[in-house]
Amino acid sequence: MEASAASDLRVESRNNIFVIAVLDVDCGSTTPVRVRNLSQNGALVEASALPPVGTAVLLKRGSLCVDAQVVWVDQQRAGLLSDHVGRQCRLIGRSVAAHRGRISS
Image 1: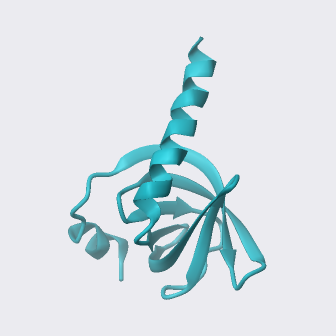
Image 2 (image 1 turned 120 degrees about the vertical axis):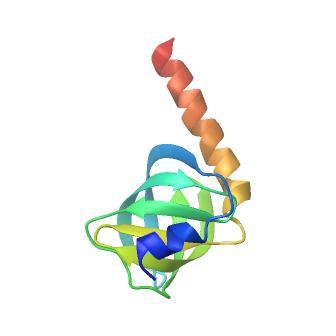
């Protein structure tokens, strides 16, 4: 699915963030990614090389890990879909907010 078509299907609000994470593909092959936004059931990631649509991945950041599926790829961006992203996103969001607080202090 193209990115523009995928964006037409959005029903959840997005939280814009910029954090570094890793996509684990095939239980061992990893790709560093930038997580650009998160919703209750998905994430937008960027990387120079991304797995194809339909690939099952693990999105990892520190000790957090979320299983997801690549639902669209457009150049260096991809959309991930997961039933578990929302729960983990709250934790990632808190760690990002805490980090920003330390920077501005």
